[in-house]
Image 1: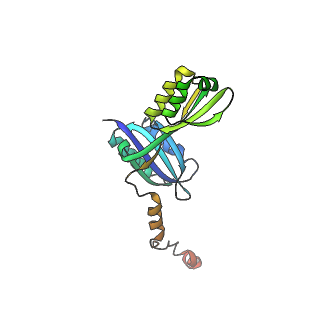
Image 2: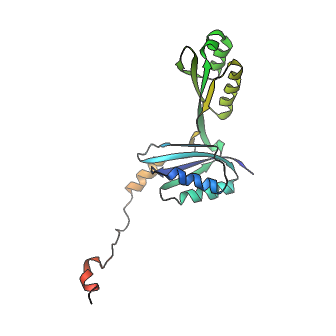
Length: 195
């Protein structure tokens, strides 16, 4: 049974990686509902948050496929009840309507919208929340002349995760592996390759 999953991918910050990850989804004909990328609490490590609707079996296979990419450090997938998530939205409304209609002002307060820009011709508000809340405000503003509406991709924190920071610190503190052995005959070149 298909349901919504949030896939979290921790990576090195490399050019072209987002394209290779997107190709993994397109080859399987899976639609990405939202994708967000940005830095993490650990310098030089980035985090992709990808939302898809699929079966858990397919998501498991995707996670394994993504983890095969050299620059990918860790991939996790979660359902909505295993994460804390938000989206951000901005709404552009005619300033005249806000000044004249008390109902619009109450509506914006009800949804916790904050003013970003006020101009003579329009005002821009922002709000954060779940998709349903954001869509509900956009729908409520339609009769009052909503000029423009934009919503960001999902950002999410995994409830059960201890974060990547501690894992990276533990890895850095662990003993280094065996030194890499170069070709053992490299310094004996004349003796080995003589005729």
